Length: 295
Image (cartoon, rainbow, N blue to C red; front, side, top):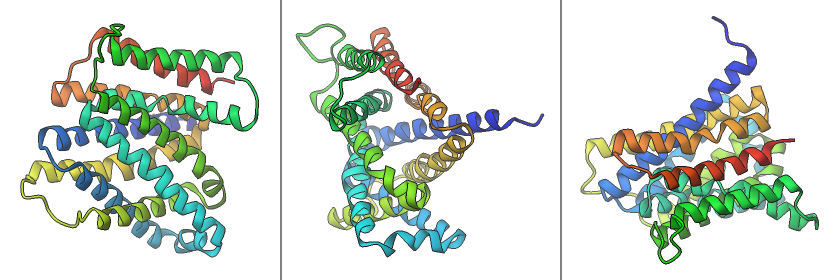
């Protein structure tokens, strides 16, 4: 049976979101079970993901890959995207996983779209529309519910986990906002490739991560390869191709499958359990994203 363009786009988008969800769980295994250094995991992911993507694009379309370096202003914008966008987004996400778990970290990061909306309301000097108010309240309710289980005398998750989770949402917002002009002008994949590689080189060298951990097992190697190849390269490629076919609005809604995938993989592969209030909080945050994408 031949799939329609809409069906093919939806399938590719779901696969991309699933790869992202799996990446978080693989990262959780590396950080919380194998106890690998978080700086090594983060810098290795950024560096090798960027390197592989740049090499692929170098053979596919060398001109489009190098075009961004023809404009000094765009080079500065690329640096801003690399460090204030990608590095914060990817790095703090894995730190959030370290102190919570993949499912919870991914859900909290999904408050990012609400932050983007608040940012544009501030920049455009306007009040939020009714549906945007609903999204803000739903998102805040979801975070509070997951963090406290409505018992305000204590946190249900670690303070560091909540901090890095919210910080990763800020990174997600910064990453999306700082990438718009560059990706519109040069395309998504060249900017993503250089953004990953530039941030990766600086962090890789800066943290002295060019070594193989003594306790690295073959399973750890497979998980790290999965984070790079499946969770970064395949996920972005599949998701962006799906969005190209079905549009950004529908793609954003289907992209909400990522935290669901992370929760399912966490349960199946690592035995992580989530309470009813955690799942209700996750639904509230994801509903906020769906409300924001409606027109």
